[in-house]
Structure formats: structure tokens, C-alpha cells
Image (cartoon, rainbow, N blue to C red; front, side, top):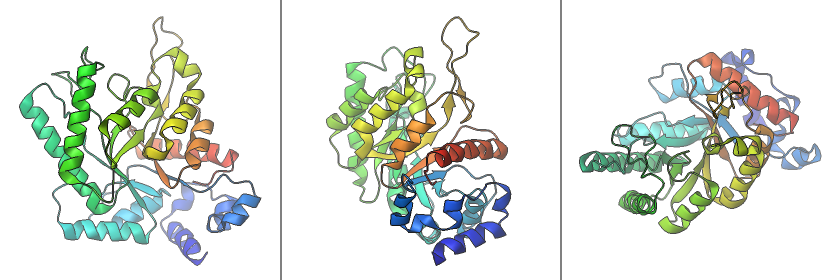
Length: 324
């Protein structure tokens, strides 16, 4: 309780009372008392909401302060591959002291690029990112599986969803994991609409085929909404994802999706959380059943947009007795 109240005091000093409403459960520190939480029918406190920070920081203390300002309990990795072990340790210790989870280290690149030189460089980038994730204790290192598109590293291509590309992804992912042999983190692939894993079932197949203990799941359900059929039943898709992939999930993304009604053919643009139709009630309920998983906001342009997205997600959580 003392630690919890100290966090509230620190947040107050940073002016975060302007950004969010502290609910009764937060103000009374119920998260520290599972029995009390159960008596009030709270799901649990296992979701750690986070996102990028816009404040510039030059040391761990400034980084933590920026996270507290936004009431984030999870963060993207604050340093890049290549920094010294001493600096990594400083940020790792600061995060642990502040009870902040480092959710993921991004390794965004194309390890299966048809250009051999580009694919080798991408694989090396993934290895370096995975090493950083392991050293800083991030939940995962995440990348897409890649694309056979020679022009757009994350773009669609006729050869992406083929048996040969599936096998190439398995081989490449094993190579990355085996090069690092991580002990404290996992390598994960983000779900994508036109590249494996493009569905719950294809992710399940990849887990079995890659067959590495340190391969995990990064779930972004918006990226799996690829048709009106899935759009209107996305809650069912989300439930299926957690049923089949739940034990492997290490980090999740938070955004939204909208089916445009004035277009003859399906247009499914990504929008800010709260402006679309992703079933956040199902998403948060399923996520809350797992053990301490970050939910990371992404793809917005301004701090104000992130505050609005976080506010929406917190409002859905509060309605369902889930404490973020």
C-alpha cells in the first residue's frame, strides 16, 4: 500500500491528475489486495497499458517521469541496440524500481527480403534487437515475419502467403532465436493481414513449426480484421485468439478499425482506439486473464491523440471492473 501511495504522490507531482481520473479502486490501492479486488468483482490487474512518450529524456529518471505523466505502466524500449551494457542496466533498474514493464523492442525490418544482402542485414538487425530485449528484460522482441515484396518491406505480395514462404519464415525465425539463445525474453512476430501469421490458425501452425521455447506471440487483433465478415464478428475472433494463443502472448497492440460505409468495396482503415468497432470489452476481458501483459498504444501522431485513446481504453476497463 505504501509503495502504491508513493506512486500516486509522484504522479501528482508530475501533473498527471490533469490527464486521467483516478478511480475509487486506484485511490484505495485495491490492486495490492487480491482478496478485496475479488470481493468487488474486479477481473484482475494484469493489463499494463503503455505507449510512446513525447517528452525528450536523456536519462532513466526523465524517462520514468514522462511515463508517469501519462500514467503508463508499460513502455517501449527506451534505448536502441548498440548502447553500452551500463546504460541498459540503468534503464532496466529504473523500470523495475518504478514497476514499469518494458513491453517490446522493435526489430522492424524484412528478414525474408528477396534481395539476399537486404535479408542478411535485416536478420542481423533482429539478432541485435533480440539481444537488447534479453539484456533489458523486455517481454519480447517483435518484428513482422517479412515480405517477398522487393519494393515495400512490409507490403503485400503474391508469394507471401505460400507454403514456400511459410518454410522460409520458420527457417529465418529459428536462425534469429538460435543466434541469441535468449533467457529473459521472447522473439515474436506481429500478426499481419497479408503475411504470416495472418490468422489465429496460421500463428498456431508457426508456433509448432518453429518449435523454439523462446518464440512467443505478439497479438494485434486489428491486423487480423481483413474482411467485413471478421469485422462484424471481431469479438469472436479475439476470443479464439486468446483461447488458442493465450499462453504464448507476450505483448499486444492497441488501436481500432472502421469499415467505411460509403465505399462500394471494403475499406478498413486503422483509427484511434474508440473511433472504430474493435470489441474492446472482449479484448480487455480476455487480456485480463493472462499474467501481466502490456497493451501498447501505437500509430498516432500527437500526445493528445494518445491521451484520448488511453482514456477510451480505461473507460471500457472501468465499466468491466478491470484495473489498468
